[in-house]
Length: 388
Image (cartoon, rainbow, N blue to C red; front, top):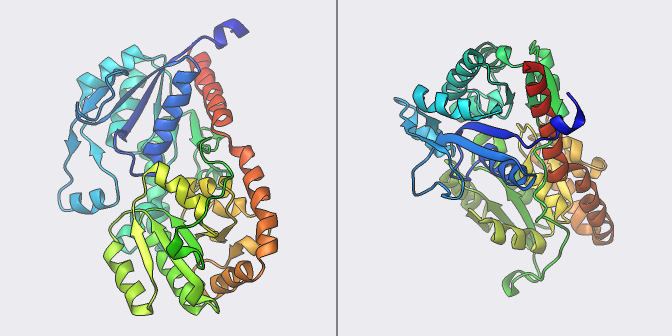
């Protein structure tokens, strides 16, 4: 194809179980990508669970009903996730409209959609956003290796063996897919940092003026390891100066509150809408990311883009250690004593922290959302060209 053809605007269909409630990373990524793709002149439609009240009337979409999951439905919803009920008629209507479809979740909706796309001859790509440990940690099986391996193989069999192009948000997860025999072309493309998250500092509220404010952003679930942060602060030489804010929601909230009370730590736990989150990051002193499991960690990226030095768990199941500029921003995963030492270092060396903050903010330029979406567009065009 000549260059003028490849640069034509595309009709892009995003297929995902959940799009209209921005309470998980995959949904937030999909919404950001849609916004930038539209700004680039493409038509974007979404097929997802949703209600007419949630949908944006400016952008036509295809609304599916919720799929109820016997026994596990409450657990699934508590994790900020739900499944859309497959409607083959609506799927076919959506696919016939599209130049290319992009599947974001590895469940029944994508399985049915890929099967139908193949039948109709519609080009498609898929993203790998769901790490098996995200599923197994919720049922206390996150460290059972053979189960996690089994889910990787199941995803490959159910979804990805049919995909010639797979979007991987990090080199780490691309390596995992190679390890488990995924055969498609792996496109390592960051999910990108929202450009609104930029280096800035704001004064703290009066009641926190003399406190060292540590922030963690993320779902309140087992694999995110808020417990390690709380135990580390309890061991800190500076514990009386520290205040912790956990920005997020999830099934572990009461458990975390009980742990904080037992340790005698003042902790604020709540969900922060984006404007409030940006303000919080501008006021904070340090960002801690103790999660054992991450495909990329958008929340950590937004924090260091805002000028916060991060301290990150050096977990073999996480891509987040890639963001550390040196060893002072890494601690042994699950080791609260090591984390306490790293926290104390940054408290006791404010000049060094001040020197590193703009360096971390500058490092965020490698993950500009605009650039990431441009790379995704190239993947879509490649899939279209090959189908022709």
